[in-house]
Image (cartoon, rainbow, N blue to C red; front, side):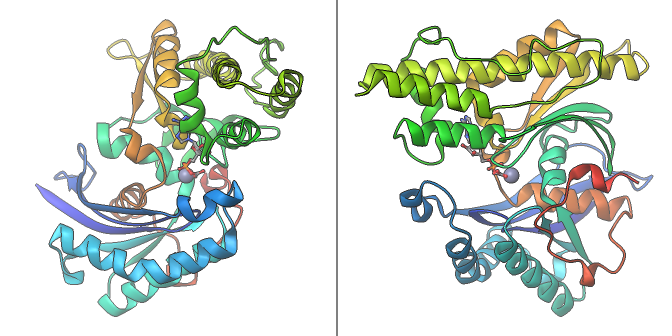
Length: 364
Ligand code: KG4
Ligand code: ZN
């Protein structure tokens, strides 16, 4: 069996990351099976941004600049690979914070030039979307719920580079909603893991918070989300309860998380019905339903969506939590997929950093 070995670099937000993966290739020249992660180094800047309750772009870019070279060296070292042993170098070109993107992109292009290897510009969201093929060899097509700090989308993933959006958020991304809720309850940053932990000791029925958009018409094909009304309701409830006791915080966290999960579950169920109606039935195996992005690390959400998937004839597939949050293995893997399929950007050395780059824009 042949392999392709790719170095990935990720600097789009507050994680500086470098990783090397090996993708198996069959006799037809297509990827067959799961990949091997030879190294996966992630340096989180969370402690640096935590006092500000969110990512400070200028600080993030400076930290990427001072750390990236060492991290790439460490990733090569841990994988026991020299630059010569790589088949390609991939880096996140967007969407994300422009300063960080420029640092990762320029570093990757310089390495590619020096080593005389192809460079591949990767969309960060495509990295999240394809991670499950690295870990589970999930076949196309599948339904994807992408839930991160900057995104909340339901997509039909038809194949590499073919993504149809079924629903998106009209205001806040779901991870952003978790982060803002945590800030309001004076919990740490990032908020998702904090809310999840506090919700474990809270009563999810303590406060009746709204579930925006889920009681809309079912005949249309709108699977959009909205979280800003829920955030406002949480704030108003918290203001009524001042001063907040630990029990109040646990109950508010549990009530908030339950409302978010109801929204994600109902919207996903609607998307499953649409996906099933648009694809010829496959009698042998259920369709994969994939959750990706940082919020997919939430265990309560995984359990809930596994039930919804089963109810609608799908099977839940999720990468391990460390590969749900930002990392470079997902960028290296997306690079390998594009290298093997010969679907690389034209003139990759001229690929720009793009603060905004919707996944659906990749679809021909
Ligand atoms: O994918 P990611 O690492 O970065 C972006 O591309 O945005 O996602 C980060 C987001 C943050 O908003 C964080 O609060 C959320 O994912 N998150 C979680 C959990 N772990 C991370 N949200 C809910 N529950 C979690 N366990
Ligand atoms: Zn991400």
